[in-house]
Length: 248
Length: 248
DNA sequence: CGGGGAATTGAGAGGGATCAAAAAGGGTGG
DNA sequence: CCACCCTTTTTGATCCCTCTCAATTCCCCG
Image (cartoon, rainbow over all chains, first blue to last red; front, top):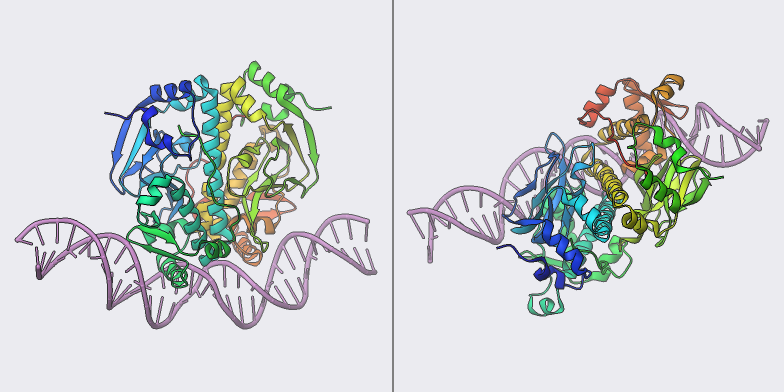
């Protein structure tokens, strides 16, 4: 039986802002159900023009597009709480695909919910704009990396930013219980596709940074052993706490 | 004296969708005035956290971010009708800057208009989401280029896509009157910064394609002499007509 | 006519790509 | 518990696309 929004475990995390009863009721009303996905499942096919609308409840996924000969670019990674499918109907350009990295659960909305959310609760419309603009800023960062950063800088940047996002989804209790580091369910191939590097070079670069003691990545978990040094390599500033965000 | 929205020449273009009287009245009410900018003027400084909100009325501009040592990445180009400043307050990451390429005029809104537009006219809120999502899809394309396309493919892609956008802003009458091609107020340095290439290599690549007779770029105008061949090099599909879009 | 930005062109170096293959892991059915 | 297969990670060797650094040449403008 599908989850009641009000009981959604994500909402209890400090990362997400509280919503009013009216807002929650509307989201609940528009919710069509849930869908479980296996690792590597295509939630939205590349080129789909009228795909659905989802909120990622658990698991990781990524947006991607590719060229005819198979070269693939990962546009950004999706973590729990990310809203999926807003761009699908609004571009002329071929749309991107969305594929899961792990087992995942998504909350399913009807396509028209995008408009209903705006119409019935303008604050939720604003929240959608917020999320869309925020995701764009992630893509901006990735473009800066792909366009202007060296391989080493790209890897350091990606590890740091993904670590921060993953970490922000945990409670203090989680941090105490879990083994060190955060779950990091990527393959080096995924990282390479996200950074615009070849697999071989991504591996060598990772290896180089790891041997300098900056991080440890094994058994699907990532541990930053020297976050300050990573930040320096990546030329990152800021405290790294992702901003409190809405949850649709 | 500032322009009355209802008389805005942009609205007469078939590229922009019609808006209701209520919608227009609200936009008019939130409009604070206009601002004229010289070429190369910084409309929003990189790193500004509480910048303004604008609609580009005339001229070209671009969004960009850069690294400490000066390497710069242009995220996407802004043409008349583009809405500017939505992302500014919503990211943790440092914000991008916005700089003009030509003389430009922007319509100035108060920062809080973003919320007022959503609140007072949900349809305009939806339009803002639309524009934000659409801009994200442009950045997606640029990331695909920077990450996975060769220099030649990047140049062909950028020329084709920019040509289409510029062309869509003209009326049939304009096309008849103007000299061949579209106004293309870029410098090769700008193109290089947008594509993640060096200036020298961008020049050589442009030269190579131009000598093969694919396009002509001189005196600030771009003419596609062989658009089909360019599309082929770029691996682009679709008819290239940008979708009809809202105008805030 | 001088000056400054933009476009070109050359030469040489190098960061990553490619191509291959070996080493690790991780299931899975027998 | 083991043999086997498939995926992922590593590592090596070589190549080449693109960058860097430097000059020139253009072109526009005062």
